[in-house]
Image (cartoon, rainbow, N blue to C red):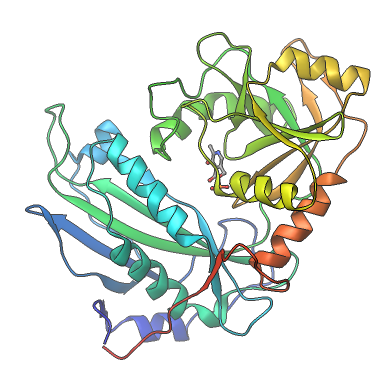
Length: 357
Ligand SMILES: Cc1ncc(COP(=O)(O)O)c(C=O)c1O
């Protein structure tokens, strides 16, 4: 018996769905979603529903005060007929930390997994496979209580929606070093996967895209000298044969892919260094050839090579090598996520099979 209720419209929603040829990233919306509500200090039962619009009070704090945190994770089905997840408890724990930072109640582990399993299990036949395709799962938690008083909501909603996707980035990315706007400051909410951080990034993202770049590279808020991350990915550089990445400074999002790559790289004998990384030092190391490669990583992008770093003064800096170390790590990570390779870390976990109820 499952603890959640399945809406009578779910079967028809699933029967009417088929995977289109072109998936993109977020273009295709899965036909079901999960929802549970929190009121009077407790979580109520969850429901699996046909995907569709939701009602929200126009004065809800999520809309006015960005009381909204989320996660991004994937279900894979390449190596086995039934889908599996990758480090789902790490997403659950990060959502709880994000919630804590915004004074929201955590989503209990059992409820989080129930939502993920309900959606991914119902969509098991629609998890696309091959070439980094997967089912992207987007759990989110928001404050639904209306009111202008600057305190937290007393009512919340936890939801899971999903999208069959291709890998987010295709080919080497051009990234634009952002020297003006700041995405996240130490002591702020950068360390949380809070929607407000993404709002802060949008102006620079638009400007980067208008200049022909894929995404902005963020620098620290205090001095504008230290590399943080991309708008939705962490960053690595190969320097003197070692793998360097900005240390978690309290503003950078602690990526689960970042953490996985550090472990995988060390397992492969690479030296991994987490340290404050000065942007101008890195550009000098690219020019001298000490830095041979730069790449980014995240659930959506997996491991994405960076071909060019464009500066605000118009100069472009291209590392000598593109997608060599990155490809090796991407293939190792994906083989593990897709269960085509052994998982010595115990990172993968079957989606729970739906039970009658
Ligand atoms: C700002 C930011 N940094 C890094 C990441 C990578 O995190 P993860 O590897 O857990 O997906 C993401 C994506 O989730 C992100 O939004």
